[in-house]
Length: 222
Image: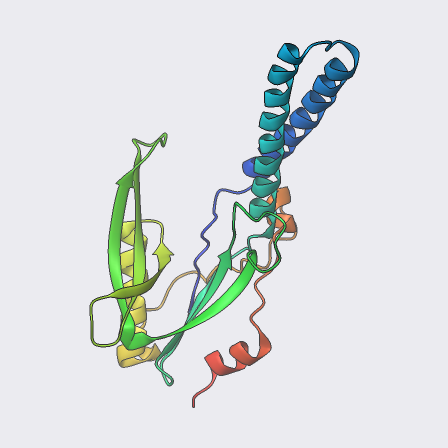
């Protein structure tokens, strides 16, 4: 069984704002360089221009990171549950804000966990959001066998309601089998079938493609 888990739902504006910031920083840096070459004659005037250039370089880094995150994060990050193997396969995208051009720190990794080591957790925090500031999600903690020490966590859903529903479905499947899952009126959304969207970030985002050996293992019994 496979559950969808799009960790980046609000896509598009980040890429657009990143491009606006990048162009603004490049034009600003060009203007500062012009001032440095043509008008600066003493060291005291050089310091503000140097600080301005440093801030624009930081803006370039932020813009490149935002663009890469919005266009390289896959369209979905699903979780597969294999009842026969009692394994859980997590399709995860990882990024590193400090290593913008790294190939190893950016990209999709598939992690495999034992079902018996998973434990659902509800988390909530307050931040500068327009909906009152409360951010909630349901995480799955991977515990050390025989202990309550979590060695890893990953997001299951972005709300308590969705998280409870997904976790209940996963438990029914793993404990009783596919016949225990209730029937749904509509088929699940195919995140890979979004090539006709006008959202540039979703069009550029890579489709979900499991590694061949993981795809075979997660679909078969031992």
